[in-house]
Image (cartoon, rainbow, N blue to C red; front, top):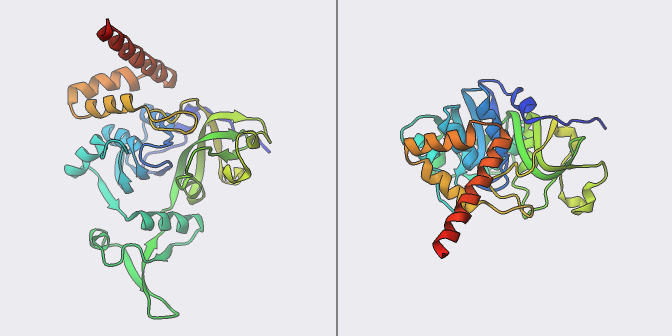
Length: 294
């Protein structure tokens, strides 16, 4: 098994303008945020982003990197909508394709199977078809049933974050849900995995059962070890969502001057600078609370 270890910069360097990028995770849960932040430091633009969206979508939209957004939802979970997404959606700043979650997963399954579409009942009789006139229905060749012909969501690149991986690309989740990251990996021409920790070959089963081995090395082109790489989203059981920082992000996103300060403080440096700034943010909050108690 070859060593597929890469740096954040290496991965971002493979992403070119105009590509279709699938981003794993779910809302504000186990998002590959370190990889997304590295994309912001690069110059790839006019991206089509396919995601069960959270702050990954918000950050890329805020930076003007998105041409088209394909999504089932965009939420911060404890905050209903990402404010950057809401702003760009309301002003019509990006092309969108919004699908029922079942349709979205069917599209990933079709791409993973290298099919042009798969039939599904999801979306029948709903405004999803009205809002996406490129979708068609198809009659079953075996009975009188009619289905939505959900087109494949083919990806140039998939980005996912997991709890553990080995250098060959086998990837493991230890939290409560796989969030369809395996489908993102299989639907893409290239998949890059960021992980909390790279372990020795054969060491993955020390932390979880065989069922937790979510993604095979066969579908992975590169692995990046980046502790707290999902921050500020959750990466259970390694860490929970950083609710205080997420609230700060959402508040800053509602005001141009506040966002400019947030960007300079947290996004203009490299990943270590980001993590250091987050630590300082929490230290200042702790000092403030202690002062209030004096």
